[in-house]
Image 1: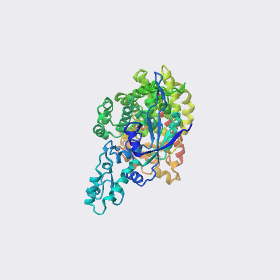
Image 2 (image 1 turned 135 degrees about the vertical axis):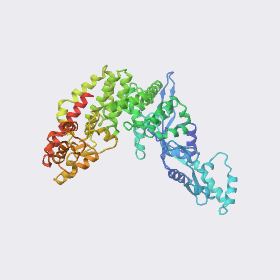
Image 3 (image 1 turned 90 degrees about the vertical axis):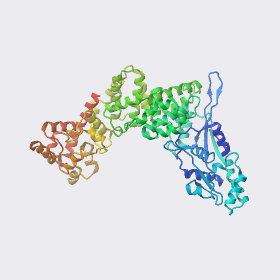
Image 4 (image 1 turned 45 degrees about the vertical axis):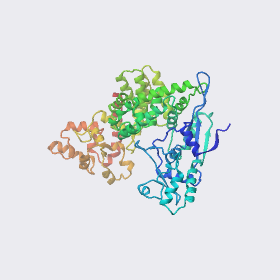
Length: 598
């Protein structure tokens, strides 16, 4: 049996199927992403009888109902959504939703004399030679003869017969041929998912999450559209609270639901620490509710797949939608989300740039929600999530095959009566003395300022409320919150003038400190031995030259909290490599102490 059938249909039939809900548009790429000019070009191609490509549909696999009967399900449009939406906008006059969730019409104009299409604009509306909106021509009951009389009286350069032929040609667009590839309903879910991702990869970059969203949105029986819309709006609101009024005004149906009330808190909440996409939200909800890591399994479960018998059962679909819906509601819950953000802040995560691994954050939230569901003590949840987040960053646990590791870890956390036991087991195996004494020190030998290990060091400084280098009132946290930059302990120009011309040499992260701009300017391009002698001098003379430290104890403490070796006071360019080696050890000790205290 073939994996697919190829048939031809018409634009009219296709739009009719959409209206009758025979084919469901999953709204994968909502809002509408095509530019208006592309809608114009599509209409021009149809008018000229050019091929406009195939659309691809797939009918849900046959599911066995409890009474033994078979449910065929509806067809899902898995490729061609933008073309179909464009046709509905231009021909049927349907509104589309833009990036700010405002509903708008895309009006395509037509010039019968020159037989050209254009996107409607003010000049076209004033020009009597243009039909400003072709959707009017396609309306049922359109008075063709009355229109021809009116148009020709205003534009005598075209005859009634000529115009009639052109209008007939335009309306024949409804009967233009559209190729439809129908994927067999017997195809395995994983195969359909792979087809879906491959055929879309040339356009918008789509993923397992996109296909899962399509599966969710077309299932009216189990509130799929409501679930999908809730996910979509929450993830957009958290990044762009300004769209709240547009959602409220333009999606009145959703605005009247309880789910709208459950997400509207986001419009007044400002966080740049964790801004999940719909893919992140789906992954977290799925991982903690289903205790699985592979998102392709979600598509299978939403289709009703029984992994043991390989059959499709309606009760599995129903149960899967219930679990997913509950997971989504737990994710978007105001108390849950804000408590999770507080856990991150308590670990020193005050900015999204400090945790580059979105997978580490996603698993941390899935773990937080799982532990909440297991009724673990709140203080224990905070400690477990903090330590696990930092441990997973230290070991780059979710950088290789995140889905497999998600699956492995969530099952073990769920199985352990005391989840801290699992943390301790992983810690003993992967964060041994050998890791701290050798591996992490080696990992710090890099010039990449976004290194997760340098970020962990910065998090440890925030956790300890450390002051910036050579400051006693400005903290590292203050500088990060004000988008302060890192500077060099051994100034870059000083190193360059002494033969260190390679970026990898002078930009070593062990040479970085957070310090005030004024301090950095005062240091100039001097050797540490030179500028630190001025700091000592200001302590003795009560005349501030560099920074604001005015006593010895403050200076010593500042050096310790910034992991600067005591030998720095006598160092010049010849000791630079020695400095890097010593400071890496101090940074590792600080990160280790920080991790153990979490």
